[in-house]
Image 1: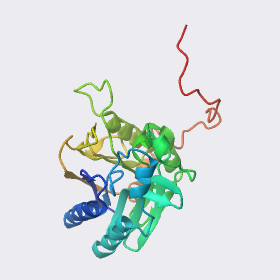
Image 2 (image 1 turned 90 degrees about the horizontal axis):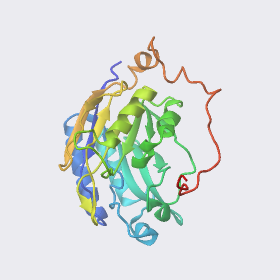
Image 3 (image 1 turned 45 degrees about the horizontal axis):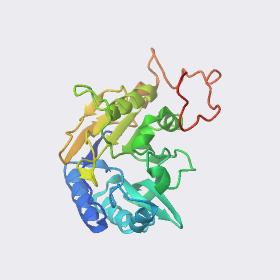
Image 4 (image 1 turned 180 degrees about the horizontal axis):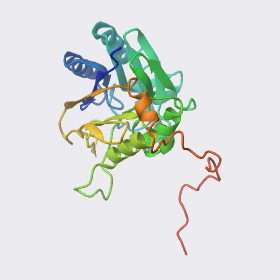
Length: 289
């Protein structure tokens, strides 16, 4: 059985507040990826309506139900037509709750939704928090876990997916500049993706956006990472819309990935020694005296 397939990441700039334009734009990129032979297409975070909302009320105005809202419905029609799988970021409304979410859609429709677990900066005042954890979705392509952007800064994101058997962790993202970033060094987000892949023996797809929104710049640098921790495609540019493409084998590499005779980061864990919880730290630590 052939289990290799082409994985595609779409680095683009969504249009703030224009759902119809973003449906058209993402649909064009999904078609372009499918024409190149892609079976799984990953879109950035908040691809449905943009990201820099002034407040919760504005986010709510552009949020839509999942899976019946216009964006997810359009992606589902494309997935069925093109026989592809799609992961993309949406601003989700569920009753009175609003989430920064990512959906997984296949040729038969909506498979699942992940809601961002680690809220960054003003997101804490805008979105409701994930209370469902890190689900892993079983697909014919392999087992897929999802995080969103800042979730990659937490090793628990990758490990939670990996211990559930994830072959791939997908990260729709809106990466921003990191203060103090040396010009010659890789983007911090790329390093997070590489470390997460290496430490958990899984593929990682970190797909970001470009451009600027209400004064907030985004850095692009989308990357696909192999289970050894090294990029297999990208990092992409910092300022161009483009596809990032690589052939992957989520199912066929399981034995090789998980049974390395030298190091097995999942099998060699010492869960009897780890501190898994402790006292909450204050929001602002006191200055040392």
